[in-house]
Length: 171
Image (cartoon, rainbow, N blue to C red; front, top):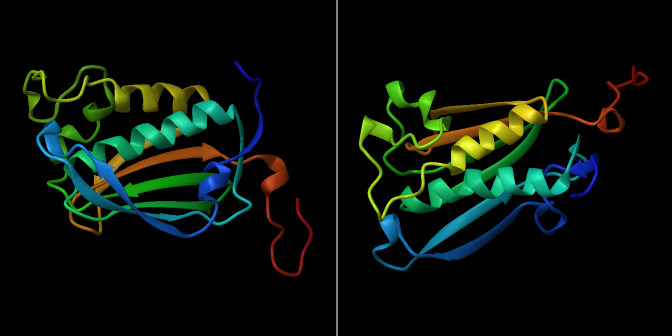
């Protein structure tokens, strides 16, 4: 396992605004379809963490929207008050209010339905929460401006990534 260090919040291959269509097996694995993945990730947002774990967080956050979105899935990286934020939005059915917090628990399936064979393992978002917690961050699920779900991961930025205020020096 690699040691912790300063890493871009999104791997280098996605450090700028980018759009691509992704072949995906489709909701519950029934049919192949193309889903537009729109990534907005300005360079310079760096977290002090294990790059492989950050990539795993982003990958797991994107996996659920790819299952449920009609199109597109939006991944936005931004900086908010010393925190790097990854926001993944989709236009799928969303996550009901009562399921937003527990959706990050192990083996939880929205609507309290037992996991069926064709559904996910119920571990992806729980792994996201565990990794983000270990990196000193937090996760959340909200309503997306696209109409579906918004999954968020907030991670502390690397001190070296702090941008000085306009006209002043970094503190």
